[in-house]
View 1 (tube, rainbow, N blue to C red):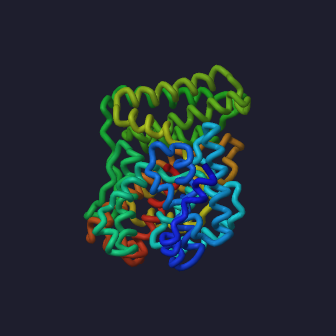
View 2 (cartoon, rainbow, N blue to C red; view 1 turned 90 degrees about the horizontal axis):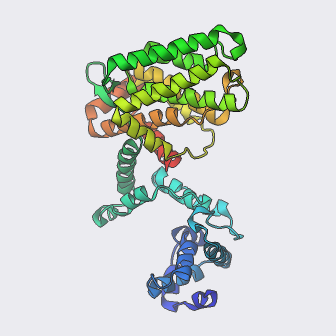
View 3 (tube, helix red, strand yellow; view 1 turned 30 degrees about the vertical axis):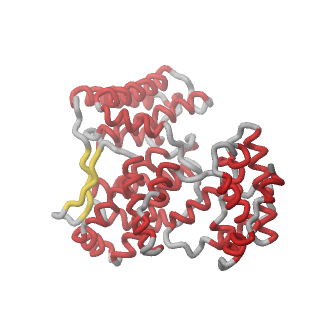
Length: 407
């Protein structure tokens, strides 16, 4: 099969590919060629032979370095697929001597961060969500003809809408013309008396656990702070109650399992109260239960520290009314700490999925409003001192990061 593929070379098409600007550009444009050839090799009966011919021509049109890399990656992919592995979940150029730095340089000038994230996903063997890639691919041809800047704007709109749908929350984020800022509108409690009783049970269980120092918890522990904040601030927000109780239940479960906390009667009672409380919210609020199911099916990807989280936090706070601003000021440091640092009081670090969900879901919804309403855009620009373009770039940075993390 390899020899057959190598022989699928048409001189005319080879000359066409050779007219492209540079070897790096050809390697970028055809960066997934090795993967396509792998599928052709393993599923030749399903694919048009002309497709196989075109891919082979594309590979052979590269520089000697790029050609050697493409064929090496093709062999590695074919061998992996013969073993039953998913080649798409492995680095693009595995087994190849080609310089990834040169490939990354080739996308540095692309309009919009989506294209860099898209290609980086292939380089790392972690492609972006196929459903979203399909949405981008289905942008009408007449739009593609308008150039990269136009496409970049359309992709940004798709990103925001997709992320808002992918990370649903039982709340609305809306612009308040009276204050010139965004505000949160939680879904009303379906059974206020039941939820109030549930919160009281959790609060009492926490008091019992704190009463005995041998339980390992204190007023300054994260568990105590999160529960106290939930009771005093978020007692009317079913989505936040469920998220906080789920997180604390997980934290207690881990710490008891690792013997960082003793399995005392009080700690086990607090653990059970948090679990039962979260279940009560889901039972009475189907949309919250659905959101938890969606979150359970997606894990945060690993991501590197970025100063923009801290740099852009004041912008989010300035664009938000007090309650939303407070939550941004809580969630972003927590997300950074969970991902990059040691949790306070030596507590086991949580995965940060719920803070990340709140941050990226809300910024996606805010960006949608800002693109649709010039009144909202100008009001937030006035509050932050940013131009329209700079403000939109801040929100689209969060959207792009959310797409990358949750794809």
